[in-house]
Length: 465
Image (cartoon, rainbow, N blue to C red; front, side, top):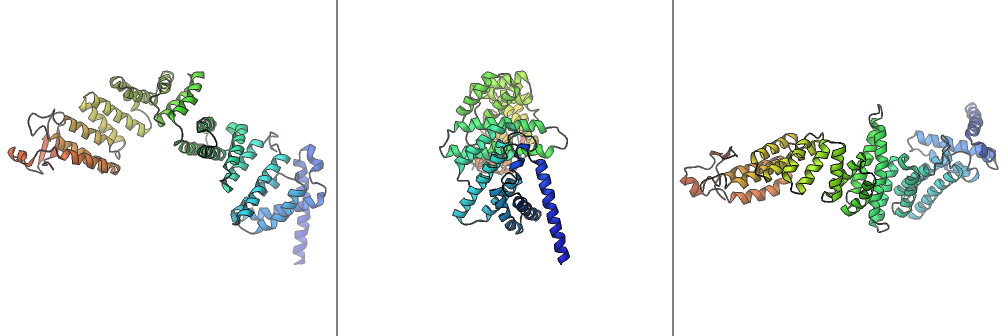
């Protein structure tokens, strides 16, 4: 037993010597004289002690009680030789967060949160530069400080916002992904509380979206970097979802009109403008018109053709919209491609080309079989054609059978349409031929019947309800 203790003691002394030598080697030249404070022996001893216990705690997955043993020597180092190692502040913030999560007393918890903030302030005071690059690290450290404060004290949103705003302004595209997420959340919450103008949400979204897009562009197509690319795509999606409820067309146009006027031929800017105005249903604004045409001129694509087609539809220039939507169906995005087919069906229907419209609707069903909208369109065309497709009391009503068939199909493939389709079915069942009329034409309910005209579809005979 004595032998083991002796070995441990010798090992401990050796680790102190080694630790001191390594620490001095990594120490900036101007700070070496102050590194271990007034009592260098006690500093090195407490530094080594706390680090040993901290490593044990870390090795346990931050679960065992070694963190309690690390606390006292860590505090001694923090108070007496703050220049000894930057690890004092990295480890200290982890230990303080752990204590905050465990603490149930609100007063003590707030005291611990203040201590956590102090740790970050001291880190900036004593280690203002990154040890690897030698460059200022204020922005990076503020990012950690702000995100930690958000997690442990969400009510301190004004302070969080101030800290993270400065962090992003300093770091720009080098900002950590999590910082962007928490900064934007803080921005929206500040606007909700009336602390900042809601227009700032748009400005902030535009600013950080540019930085996020730069990171996405950096990792795109790089072998072995898929997980980093996915991380940034997730961040973009998170921020887009957070942004969704806030921006109105007026604010969006105010921000992007200025950018468009400055660089009207910036393809990436035009893509951003058309995408966001489309998402927020701001297609009626002239900026959308200009940006869409500009994008198509500079970089013709099914996507920009889609935008122009939608814009022309809004202006009720249906015939002009056809060629653009025919190009748009080639988009890689299945949802948008299906939408283009549906728009084509609506356009052709509006100008009376029902057969072509039905063909477009069926093409949409092949792309997304679970979407019931194409069947609704076909049913509506059948119903609209009923009187024109007959020459007597019976044949002017039979198209309603085919229409109802489509409404039934629509709710079968898309149950979310059930309520709307039931209303349509109930409405058009009243237009079915009466029993007397069926008897007069020697027709029996349940038998098959082929509806003529352009519809040319087999259905079942039903009496009015």
